View: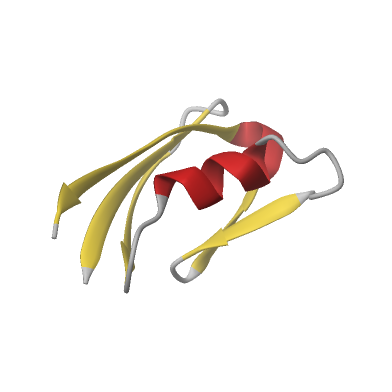
Length: 58
């Protein structure tokens, strides 16, 4: 399991656990204008609201 710190442009900071973390895959989703939301762990985020995603523990 990998713990991620996810910050948003709306000012929220979330700690989310995921099985695996692939920064390239998430970056591709964030840059795809046909995608409206992105599921990270058990949370769903608006694609345009995501600010930073960084691993804090693995």
